[in-house]
Length: 321
Image: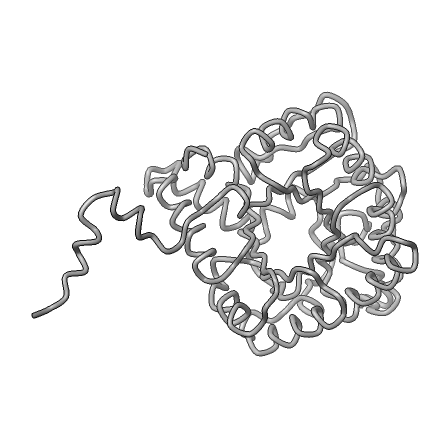
């Protein structure tokens, strides 16, 4: 006598009851791009249905986020000026700092996470201080810590260093603690790969490097044991949450992380993943809703506790939350 597993697939009611992996509003963090100026809500060409927002129009998107019960946002700023040291990134009146204060006025209980990096703010587009055409790791740490501290002073709940400099989590943790921000968390981009899936984001954030690439500091796409070392180092240095980026091409990395570490894991469904689904659905090649929900389910099933995705709003509408 063979087993009849199909008894549990007969209709949607029983499939829903026995489903092992379920998407919920608290699974998602929604990325927001904030720009200087007034009355700006401009669609990003490479990422349809995502927008640049000026501060005076942030209430529109924050209201949607709160209504859909999303618990957190990840902020990216596009500054009005750039220089070699990315000084606008740690300006206390910078775009991210102002956005944090604005969002906390609109929705005080919303978790506000800030991206800590330099690529949007430097004239050369690299994620740190450049010396002789090379990103100086240890010098960059001082600047990243200044950025993180300025975000904490503005009132963010958590900083998210995405630069992939060695030692930056510990350096930032020490800076925050010594300045009294012991409760400001760190979500570390721990296993961030030098991926080709970041293109639309770089267009949206105007953050492409003006020379070379980022392969000397972001991870090689073929390595997974190295990712485990990166994650272990970040945990030891004080990371509260670790991240794998991108998500879909690196589900195996998420799974390895889940099996080895008892910490919250975030995964970033990045701009290239989003843009490809959008393009294919526009051409009629795929059903956008079912593809998106399947992809997001796979990320959670692989072991992610938190999914950062540009599809967060749509997903929750489709799920009828």
